Amino acid sequence: MSSALGMKPFLSQIPVPCPVSEIVKQRKVHGNEYYEVSWRNIDGLQVSVVPGDLVSSACPEKITEFLEKRDEQKKQKRRARPKKSDQAAVKDVDAQLQELLLGIQSESGTFPSMNNDSQAAD
Image 1 (tube, rainbow, N blue to C red):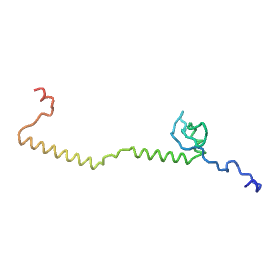
Image 2 (cartoon, rainbow, N blue to C red):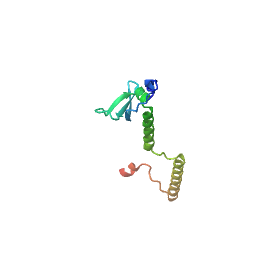
Image 3 (cartoon, rainbow, N blue to C red):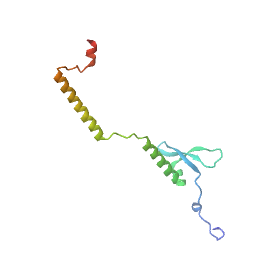
Image 4 (cartoon, helix red, strand yellow):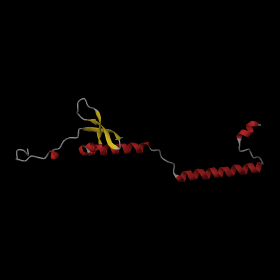
């Protein structure tokens, strides 16, 4: 259409659909970033490893999608850590039980040995 008007667009201005279907994996080879990509509509070629700068210049949106997907997967794998207040409460209960046990033992006059192996030897 623009050629009918006597204008020739620059090659960089012609929109080209991204041939990458998705990024499968991120790789580092000799300190350089590469992506393992699956291709869209390329016969005989399903997956290949491509330098990161080529992927970022041709399909930056695919890198963004890949990084978001990877971050989401990492979040799902994380285990919830127990809150410090819960840990403190457990320690308080443990200390109270220990005091109660020592009080009962001192009233009854019996103190079991701390080492169970010495009882087994008797």
